[in-house]
Structures are given as C-alpha cells and as structure tokens.
Length: 348
Ligand code: AMP
Ligand code: MG
Image: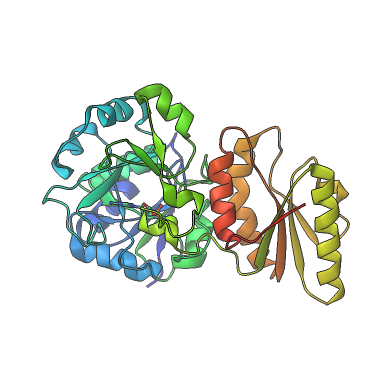
C-alpha cells in the first residue's frame, strides 16, 4: 500500500479530501495530518483495532500510550471521569493549542489506546486542517507523532512519507509545521498538576494561569526516577549518526567542536555540526547546518528535527551540536536534544 497524498493549506482547506480522510478514519484506516506542533498519525481513538494499527505502523512499544485529539470542548467530557477545575481553566485558555492534559479515563476509551493505563491524554490541536479532519472522523482521533518509533518527529509531510509512506492510507500535506516540538503534557491525575513533557508552553506560563505546577522528577534524570510518561523513557528523536552536545561559553564551544570534528574528519568519518547563524561561520570542519538564530528561539525549535533528519540524508557518522538553553523554550529544546543524543554531553 502506498499512501495517497493530498495537499492543502489552513487558509484553503480541501473539504472533499478531508471528508474522504475522515471516512478512512471512521472505517479504521490511518491518516497522517499536520498540527501546529508536529505531524500526527491518526486513527479512530475509540477503535482498539485502529490503535493497534498505529502501534504497528510506527513500530511503537505497546505500553506507550497515544494522545486522543479532539476538535470541540464538549468532546472532552465523554472521555474522562472528571475534569478538575484547573484543567477547565487551561482548556479554556490554551485550547486549541500545544497542550496535552491527562485525566482518569472513562470506559469509552479502549485500553489499546492508552497502552493499558487507566488514564487518557487529550489535546485540541491549533490547526484548521487537523480540526476539520477530527470532526469529519467523528470527533476522536488518536495521534502520536507520524514518525517511525525512535526517529526524529516529522515537521513536514516528506518526513512522514519517508518513514510511513508504505504503511498508511493517506497523508494530508499542510506544509511545514509552526512550532516543531511536541505538546507540553500536564498530568491532572496527580495532586499538583505535573508537567510530564516540556513543550512550547512552559512551567511559568502555566503557573500564571493555574498556580503551582510541578515538573515530573523523572525529567531531571535523578538516578532511579522513571519518567511518568512512558514515552519519555525511550531513546528517542534520534538521528542515525552519533550525536554529542557541547555546552559552555560560546567561544569555547566552537573551539571544542572544531577540535572534535577535525579529529573525526581525519579518521575518515563524515561529521555534521549543528550551529546557529551567529556561530556558523566560525566552524572550519565538517558539514555545518544552521538551526536558527539565538535571537529567535522559536526558529531553533522549529528546525531541530529537520536538521537531525538532514544529517541522516547526508549520512553523518558523528554529529556535534551546541546547547540551546534559551529563555522560554530552552527546557523543551534541550529535553529533545538530550534524548536524541542519548544524554551524551560535554561541558567545556
Ligand atoms: P507522541 O504522541 O508521539 O507525542 O507521544 C505521546 C506522549 O504522551 C508519550 O510520551 C506518552 O508516553 C505520553 N502519554 C500519553 N498518554 C499518557 C498517559 N495516559 N499517561 C502518561 N503519559 C502519557
Ligand atoms: Mg512521538
């Protein structure tokens, strides 16, 4: 099977194609679609067979639950046992948007969708193509990122096609995504709302809306503490080459990366370097890719996964990256970059 590809923009929806995509989902098929964060691989969230197909297409471990996507607030109630007041506030203020919330699930949601957990993750994406598709599909679309499990998440339809083009029914191409990192996940089954995965919305922004919000202790890599989101424990977002992050004062980082790159180049390896506009001209070795500008942290988030995939295409054996502890999204960017690097970091 080769996925049918349909193209459209948020401004000009192809409603006929979306009706067909919705029909595929209603019948238990798989459709990849754009959201504001990354591309999702959609299946009917209430159909255990469709969820099983998603796991199979991605090669995803079956204990790693899926996020249920909705398009209208009244579709939240039937999925969950109860909606805490603070979750209602976040839903009102942040949806549609890059926020996923976890609740105790109702019996409507099959365990095949939640990886056997008694809780369910729900999100309303801020993308007209996604919202219309979800409505056409009947309101409940389970959608993990549309990549092969373990690889960088897809931020363009071409990434989806490369990973899953021969395993799913349709790809809706809505162009490159806006944010480029997965949603912030907040767990409301805990006494204090807890961030299980950092994203575009950070702890401080959420605390301004609902008061105290914690970070999951498993995120800080304390010895022996497991992340609560099952997906956060896997090596993830990883390019094929061996990625190392170099952290420290700007000039020292450039010197160290140049030194490491030269060493590997002399041994005959293909070396990639992840730089920013400000530093790119200072690298003298290897294949240099510019991820964005330090003055525009959103550019760094948006291009991270594409750059990692570009180095796969270039067959880089070793990749060296600067660290990006930027003010607002730094936590989310570094969370993904560290996982992509298997936590290999050199401090200079
Ligand atoms: P993805 O859809 O590929 O962005 O991955 C979804 C993420 O949400 C994974 O890290 C999952 O482990 C996490 N997740 C989904 N549902 C739950 C849940 N009920 N409890 C904890 N984590 C969840
Ligand atoms: Mg994913």
